[in-house]
Structure formats: structure tokens, C-alpha cells
Length: 405
View 1 (cartoon, helix red, strand yellow):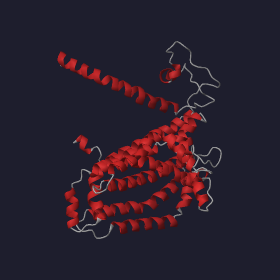
View 2: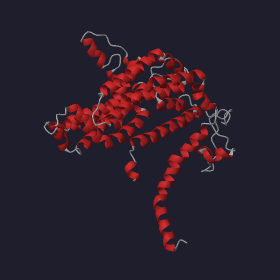
View 3: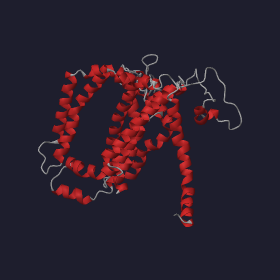
View 4: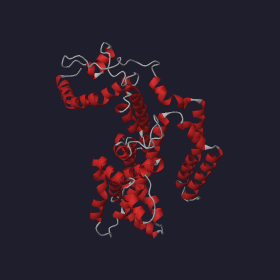
């Protein structure tokens, strides 16, 4: 039986954590419930308002809350209701992905990637041996060659075309994943190189270069303004084309070409994000004992064995959380691409643009086409994708292992 002192202690603890609980419920749990509810409705510009006589709307939709004893706003069109069938919005987004041709195309792509997974497992197995029999480069080259041969034999491009024709969902998510796959490794590699250079004690002016190289990360707080500067560089009469004209080359409208526009978005976001890796890796490098490198020098190990066997394993606890966080942030990237291309160039009406990533697509669905039901269904699917990817990354990288031991 709980005594008065125990009850008072429990109430005191509750008083401290109650604001946090209320904040989580108001700003996290409630929006998730509301979005999930809207994803099953036909809420759009033709059905903008709720039917406040519906008990669910009266509980969940803010416009039905008569806080100031005012009636809910009246607009054009009938009130939104549940769609029929109830999963119509979800079927419109991903239904075509479960057709026979689409599933076969997806299986073909997975088969072509199998040699890379095998190469990763074999390379890890060789690393665990006392004396490595096959160099890492050879293992990965064989894996890439096997994957390329399978891709040619199975006609992987035809499989991609089938998947791209399934609808907006695969197109938008695939382009977003491709952006993350390109952006994060380039940001990490550039940050690693600069961190190693700046960690050299014999380099003069290290503090000055740290400040200068950190400026892009500081400028990311005004990413839209800085992206507009980059946009000016790549305009038809912009800086890049003017430089090319001086040396005798004709420029082009870079942001109107699908491939170059995609590459420019990646380039600009790498420029924004590499200082984060540079600072994280730089801090981790200071914790590595110099004795390890001295012993490696005595054994005759070059820079590559030292990087692979000393530097990267020692900074792993610092860089893995940074990679996971940066990947999630890159998947949700909006400001840079919106300022540069607004999701374009667009191939045709109703088709996602070449740089229309997840957040841009959701923004257009809500604020331009006002298809709230479809947009929230898209957001729910993306949430579960990111949630699953985060859980998988936490398990594989064991980032939180030390917190629960």
C-alpha cells in the first residue's frame, strides 16, 4: 500500500513531467492521429470542410471545436467524408506497385543488387581473419562486375521503366532515396578529408580554415537565401555560363535539364552539409591516441591501412549517429530544392518533377492541388518507411547499445 510520502513523491514527479507529456500529446501524437484520419477521407478543394455533426470530426478536427462559440466555417462544396473503398488514397499511391509486372521488376532489381551484399559479407569475413587473403578492392570489384553482368542480362533498365510507370509514389520515393544515397556519402567523404587535413598539427592557420570551412553549415540556417545565390550561378545568364563563354564554350539552362538539375541540388546540399561531418569527425580524431599511428609507422603500414584499420574504426561511434541523422534529414529536405528548382523541371502535367522529392511532393499536394487526403496518406506511408529504416539502422549500427547496458 502506497503511503502518503510515496503518493506525494509520485505527484511531484508527475508535476515535473506533465508539461512534457502534454507537449508530446499536443504536438506529436495528436497531429499523427489527425493526419491518419484525414488520409482515409476525400478532403480536397472540392470538399474542404468537415461535417461537424460527425462525432469523429467533432473530436479530431479543430474547425469543429466551438472554442469561441462560433460555428464551423462554411465553404464551397460538400463536407469531406470517408472515401470508398476506405483505402482508396493508399491504393492510388501504391496499388500499382503490387501488380505482377511491378513485383517482377522489383525482384529483378533486388537480384542485381545481391552480388553487392555478398561482397560486403565476404569482405567483412576476410577482415576477421588474421591474414587477409584477398584485398578489399578486389572483392568489391568482383561484386560490382557481377552486379553489372546481371543487370545487363536481366535488362534492369526495363524494370526501372516498369516501376516508374506505376505512379507518383515510386517515382518520388526513388528519386528521394537516390538523392540521399548520393548526398550522404559525398558529404561524409568531403568532411572526412577536410577533418584529416585540419587535424595535422603542423598545418598553419588551422583555426582560420576551420572557421572558413564551417561557414556553409552556418549559412544553412538561411538555406533558401543561399540556395537563391546558387540558383543565380546556374541560370542561363548566370555566373557559370558567363565563365564558360569567356573560355569559348556555350552554356545551357542547367536547371531546366533533368540530370544537371538533380546534380546541382546534390552539389548544393553537399556544400551545406559537409561541415557537420567535418566537425563531428574532427572531434573524434582528437580522441585517437597517437601511439596507434606511431606503432603502425613502425610496422610499415601506409596511409590506407592506417585509415582503414585505425582511423575509421576509432571514429565509428561518432560518425554512425551523424550518418543516420543526416540521412533522415536529407530524406526530408525541402528548402534547398524548393529555392533552386521548386521540384522541376517538369516533364508534363500531373507528373512529378525531376527534383520533386518527398517533402516537395507533399507540399504541392497540400498547398497547390489541395488534395489533403492523398497528401496525408503519402505522409503516413513515408512515416512508416522512415520509422522502419530508423529502427533497422539503430539495430545494425548499435548506436544506443551503451545507453541500455
